Length: 230
Image (cartoon, rainbow, N blue to C red; front, side, top):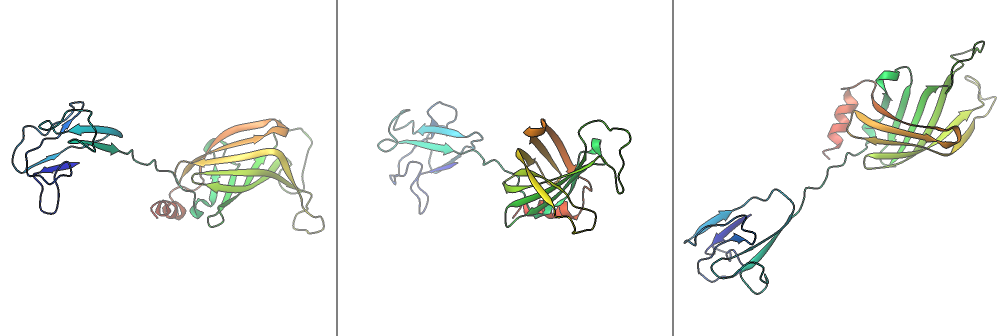
């Protein structure tokens, strides 16, 4: 904040008046002062914290008087708006927890529709039973899907299970079942990391997974960072 007195060309001094007399600027709590009155002075004070600062002219007023009727003033310092990460189309990628490599998430973001699709490639919840086999793949592979809206840095998805089909065949239609009250929430902190929280009440499953891109520092990361500046 900068005060000048007497009024410069086109302006009207520290208190809005245009009377060519000497003034001062003194905080009501005495935290700053412009010093003794002098001709043609400029005083500058920086405010780093949000809040309300009251000041007065020590030559013509005292602390606490009405700013509309006396030589008193008020400054309102607003805090800097918190920057929120914005989900964007460049978040579409493969994500995982490094400690559990071999399972993870494929995520697609439709930015214009503010919608997210997720495929979770994982495994059965219990220990393996001997003797089970599969013609293709591993009998304990599991694939869940989830989809839902996003806002700001957070996506909230409903969880589904797709089953009933046969490899590369339309003979059996897909059976898509939504898990009751099951959700996946993802909160991204930046273009390369996020926190995924899952809750599947009917199976008694809940937990939190820190996720990162399978391939960091790629073209998608650069596009994501550029999107934050738009």
